Image (cartoon, rainbow, N blue to C red; front, side, top):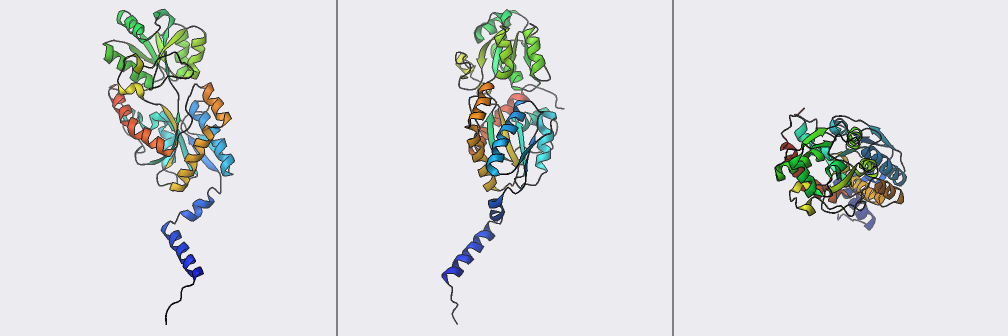
Length: 328
C-alpha cells in the first residue's frame, strides 16, 4: 500500500526537520523572558559604566525586559571578564569592558582566567574617542615638533593613567622615534594625573577629552596631537600624530569599550543585540553623551568589531610587550 503524504503533513514534517536542525531557534525567538545582566568590568562613574547603563536602557526598552548593570571591577577588567566567561551562553549575562581586557592584559598579567580569543563572542564595539596629548604651557610647544625640541633640551615627564596604557605606549614610541629620554609618570587613574599637570608637575599628559578639558580651559596646556587616522571633531585644528610624521601603527590604534558574551551564545541573539546597539548609538540621548566625551563614533556592530579586533589586537600586544614590563 502506497504511503500518501498530504500537503499539511509535508509542511509539518519540514518544520520538524528545521526545528531539529536548529535546536536553539525555538527559544531564541522568545528570548528574552527574564532580566538581562550586564557585568561592567570597571567601576561606577567611568565611561565603561556610563556606556553599559545608557546602552543597557535602550536594550531594555526594545527587548521588554530589565537590563541590570553589575559592576565587578578590578585587575584591568579581568575579574568581570572571568565571571562572564563562566556564565551560561544563553544571552542573559553580558560583558562590558575595554581594549585592555582583551589585548594589553595578555602581557600585563602572568596568567589570565580566560582566553580573549576563544572564550567570548564579540557583539559591539564603542569608541573611547580621541585621546589628546597635552603639552604644558611651560614647554611653549604649539605642535609636536616643538615639544620634541623641548624634550631634547629639558628633563621631561609625561603623565599616564597606568603602566601599559596607550599613553605609556605613545611615550615609548616618541622616545624610540626621536632618541628622547622622556619619563613616564604613572597614576592610578586620570584625576590625580590632571591635577599634577595643572600644578606644573608634569610637562605633558595624555588622557580622555572629558578629563583633559578642565586643564585646557584653565590654560594649563595645549593639545598638540591626537591618535587615530582622523582628527577629532572637538579639536578640528589639532593634527594627528600621523599627520605630524609618525608612521608607527600604534598611532592609528582605536581604543574601545565593548559588549560581549560567553562563547557559544546563539547567533540569532548576537545579531539582535548587535543591531540594537547600532540603533541605540544613533539616538539623541546617546549622541549627547558622546559629544560631551568628545567621541565621534557611536556603537559598531559585531562584524565591524571583529574586523577591528583582528586587525588591531596584535599591534596592541606587541606594543605593550615592547615596554618590557614585569607581569603581575
